[in-house]
Length: 227
Image (cartoon, rainbow, N blue to C red; front, side, top):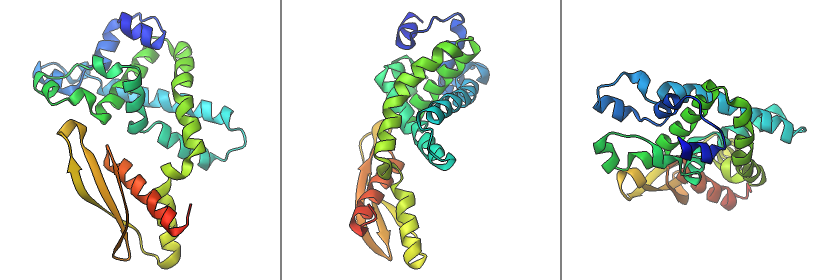
């Protein structure tokens, strides 16, 4: 708990909330514990807390942006990809409690698991009556990603841009195909090709399929002159 307090800069009053927030469903299943003892319910609550705070930050930081633009930025900033990066940056993933066999598979480092645990911890702080103290922390960790997405939005929105372009030409949509998967199950790298009109246009790689698709789409957008 002291390490968590140091990471977030917030004093913890109810440690049991945070134990739940860092407990993976595999552990409660292994120990035959109630499902309420893992992070899933707290993740549900933390997701709402995150979106509220992120929305408030965006609303005030970009006073001239339309609702649609704010929503697009928020969807990227609160994505599993971003939250996992934050969780790794603050070493939160090291505290995730998983079943013994899952630990050997590296489950605690999987993107979706790290993101879920991060959101669950936010939910725990909310229930611990620490929302006011949590807001400055979230402002600090989210702002670099908000500014990055705003500055390089085309890279994060490339799939939508590519599809809008191709449909404006002949109503056809791009097709994404996985051509290679490398690495262990908990740390895979995907290589994906994007095709249009039956021809491969570009490829991209990433730690998730979504990331690889966005990179492939961005390269295709450059080829077509969309960006």
